[in-house]
Amino acid sequence: MKLFVSDGNPHCVKVLAVLEFTGVKCDVKHVNHEERVVPYLSRPALPALLLPSGTYLFSPNSICQYLIEVNGQESSDIVNQWLEWEATELQPAVMQALHMVVLQGKGAQTTRVLQGPLSYLDQSLSKRTTLFLTAEMVSVADVVLWAALYPILSDSSLVSGNQTELQHWFERVGMLAACGSAAQTALHGKGLKAESLKTYLQRQPSTHHGQGQVQGRGSQPCN
Amino acid sequence: MSLKELSSLEKALGLKKPNKYSTQGDRKVPVLQSINGPALVGLVTIATHLVQEAKRPELLGGSAEHKAVVQQWLEYRVTKVDGCHKEDIKTILKDLNSYLEDKVYLAGNQFTLADTLMYYGIHHVIVDLAVQEKEKYMNMTRWFDHVQHYPGVRHHLPPVVVLRNRVYTSGHH
Image (cartoon, rainbow over all chains, first blue to last red; front, side):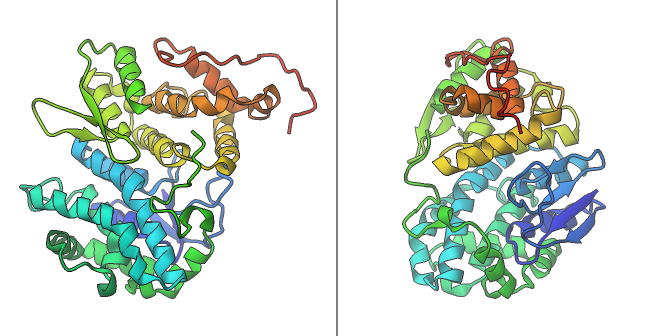
């Protein structure tokens, strides 16, 4: 089994954190952002996991779910729900915010983009009865959401003072050794200030993260 | 849109009692109300839950690998296919076509939930494809035709005519 990652790619924080968290044995190979690892995709998609059967997994969350599954843990409705929320709601907002702050130097304007999903997460955390997001123990949902938010929430200039539940949860999950070392490997522990993050973002198609789009989605969807 | 899909999925799974749904947010994300637990949010989450309720775990994939592949294409449906830009449609069709070159279904030889939801999500694109384009993306069209004829799948959607004999012989690449 081989995991392909690229330096400065924020999606790689997730899979590296879950890989270390589960302790699953796997070769990690560092490649360029442009490397087309998955043969049937026309655009580069990293991280990617090559399974012994020759199958490729190219979605970070599916790679994380696979690692958890081979480690003997079953997924649940609540974990699935957080992973789906991360992919459909949080991720477009985070990528748009990263573009604004790292490439355009518009840190102050990211609130508009991030407010919705961050408040939702903060409120959900306030209502929960368990120590972590889905249980008393850390789950794959905590690690994936932590990794998705790492570049944003590790930067004090982007943190909103009134989302205290979110802050506490972020610090608690971040204490896991797996999270710290994944942030170190993928972004050199520098978060937004990692030079490799800038290089990564510069090479992404910018049409999806344009300034005028709050959801990271186009104004003219095809359906 | 997604509520119609969930209702069709319930029928396809043979679930007798229809569930209660609502939607939330600008994207009209489906919400499943539940009497004995918290509400479930999101198309993939609810669809996965319905399959488990119907005791059809094989539709989510048998092995860890198949489960991950099914989850991946379910995620692809809600992140890439839904709300895609016009210029992205060609990339999606091309990638699916290339992926399906040596496969009957998205998870290989076995029909899964990924096929059902991808079929529902991409139907509006395939309906508008010209015959020539259908031939260009032949593996994808063949998969689409398999899925629309799979027992119980095509509930709320009209059938799409797929020619089995080529009309344009020079269009092959």
